[in-house]
Length: 487
Image (cartoon, rainbow, N blue to C red; front, side, top):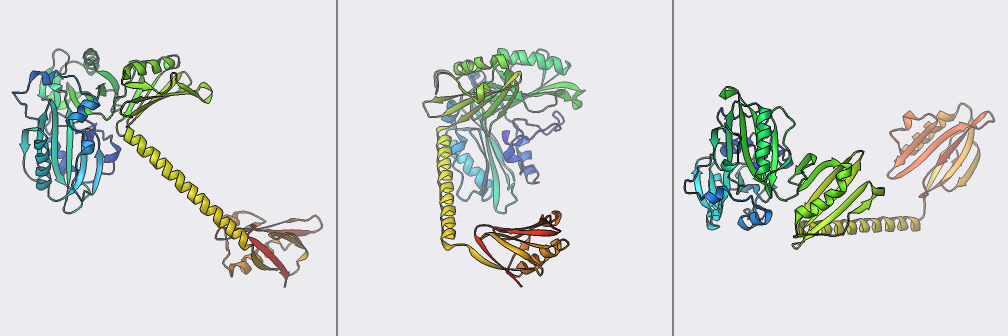
């Protein structure tokens, strides 16, 4: 149930605790506060997977699937949502959630009908107000559930479909001396009297031997770690914590989810973070190891991926390097490294051919729109220039002398040494009648004032002229031609 807690399923009994539950999917952030999420969450959590005794043994030992192998079984990115669907907050290779018009039962039955037609075999079903069911096909487990609308929309319901992948976690190795608490193909829990750090060390070694590689962590609570491991397009959550309801023994839990991209992380990598929605992997290595990571990445991706350049491209005086890899489908993985002190930060990003095409099309449209806006601005400026400046007759305050026109939009004159503020007030009151207003900052500036009207501004400034009086300067934009006159 990746869409709720990123593979962290909590059963509704005292065997598993709900604290430390971390919602990590940004698409769910706006939903998590809604009370409507509770029915779906309950429906998902109370749906145990009924083990099928006739399940083939090779389904347990099957190699974790690749993205291509998952696509051949079911690609939920292409799931046909009903007409009138209001929202699709999650649409990934292994998970889809959408708001469909109609009742929970009618939408649930429609989904189940499609799955059966596609060859999925029902393993368990739970009818009711919030129905749910589990299916199996070619070693892949899938769950379906329906609940009331998470958006609170009347006459709508929320449908969730999750492909758990082809890894039967009941076959994943555990340290010796573990007692099963709840074990099925989707999630497994074991108890032991061993300390958390010992269980973590032993589990890590067993998973490495089984082909799993570290892939970051889900929380920063190192006292009760929630760790990620990856193998091909399957990510497994390993949660080790205390179980107060079971004499405070140590609890080891496994669950899995499908990833939309296969981005390897080097064994020596630190600070691993993977964003499955953006298909972006970040990690850090020592600076001296950075050049070798590009060669390692090329080897890990295999012959299906071809580097776009023979060597990484250098940027920013050697502080940054990047290299792109493409496959026959037109997908692309871009690997970027940035040196930061003694560390090199890497970022690997995956994009499908369709995503690349959409991004290029969006970029073209944005460039065209920007060019069109620039053209309109230029035409408007030319039209304004052809029209000539707007004549603004402006009356000078009493006592003004030595009027001098510097240009059509700038003039100055002299007044007595105590007349500066009176002149500013005089112009403000005069021009207010024709739509000019004081800007927000004028009151904070001594001896200075700005009046605005639309996009135009007129600045007024006075200073000591050195001859026992003040000089007042008035300047405006080129679009205005002043015609100053004495009263």
